[in-house]
View 1 (tube, each protein chain N blue to C red):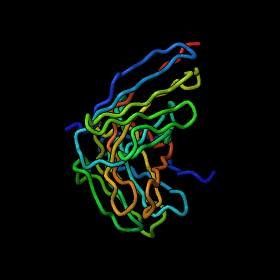
View 2 (view 1 turned 180 degrees about the vertical axis):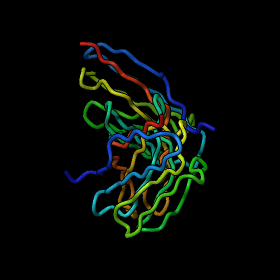
View 3 (view 1 turned 45 degrees about the vertical axis):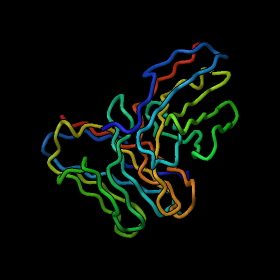
View 4 (view 1 turned 90 degrees about the horizontal axis):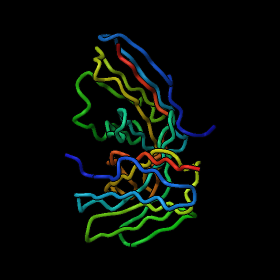
Length: 115
Length: 115
């Protein structure tokens, strides 16, 4: 499978705990995006990287959220001191920057439930 | 601020019928308009996309119609099949540096095709 891979698929945590998600993009893709999707809504942009540089962060990304892409390959999204409002599907996507119409390829997401 | 408005929220179509989903956008700087299909438990997958220099694009049973002056675009699914039952999202973005970036999604349309 050469698609975008996300781990874990599901995460249940108690409020106040820290969680970390991992995304492995398509290998030749230099752009990586994180989105959040709540039930019945479209994905909302959180942040994106070009190679290892984080180029944009949404206002949705509070100080409790941090994303890294240390070697320009896989990425991690950490949520500190989780809150019930953080419960959502966290989607990762990748694309090949520099080409017109390079589509975003999404992974199957990590579903976070905060109890 | 919702920059992409999608309707209807849900749609029921008989097998063989035409499914039509509409979207309207606000930002005239948007220049890339994709449609994504999402099945339960899966990430969104690109279905078809259009740029504003054309008014229509067809791929198989799927057609995008684009009206730049009205800032509207729609997805038509011809000969709808039960396997098309999914949630459909329209999206829009500006083109930075030759590659699509930071998709803004609509709220989704849940399509049910009855056999």
